[in-house]
Length: 202
Image (cartoon, rainbow, N blue to C red; front, side, top):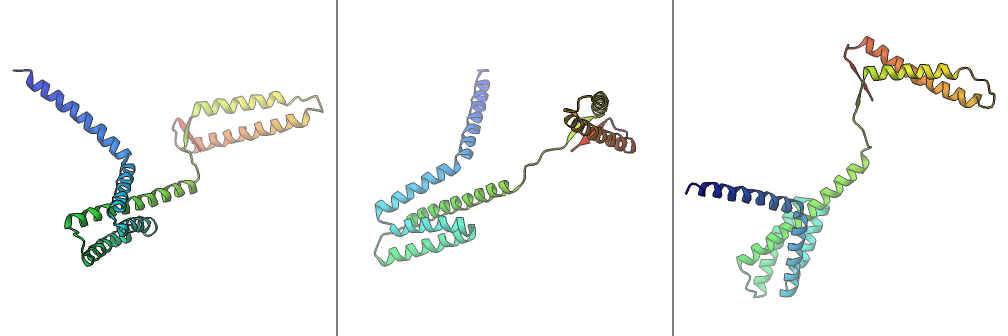
């Protein structure tokens, strides 16, 4: 008898894990499931002869994409009212359930159009933003060792005897001198600034 609470707790734990997996799958495939439902509604409209409902579905999705959620919502409300009135004039037995069913379909396609528009805008914004990197922190003893090594290499390259390689070596010496001056500037800034053990290099 004492084992039943443990078994029940394990069952609840496994059910919670299964719930998390199902929710994760639904979050990842919400647009796909919505598109499948909308295609099913379009098929239902074509089979049952509700051509105006199919046209309204396409129009509502386009309104959500081009004009936003408010326009799509307004079009869905007026569209369902128009379909209800039109069905009443033609003697169709359009119940409240069918009207609600059509309105849910219009809301789904409006959401799909709005979300597609937002995703396109987000992708365009990402392509406009230049790629950037975070600042790195260089330990002070590393920068000091690099500066010392650069100075040593520059002094080793000074005794140049060959005229043919003189220009390339002078270019290398100039570049090493530039790097050495950079680290000297870091050292001066470090001495004038805070006495922390690391310097931020951008």
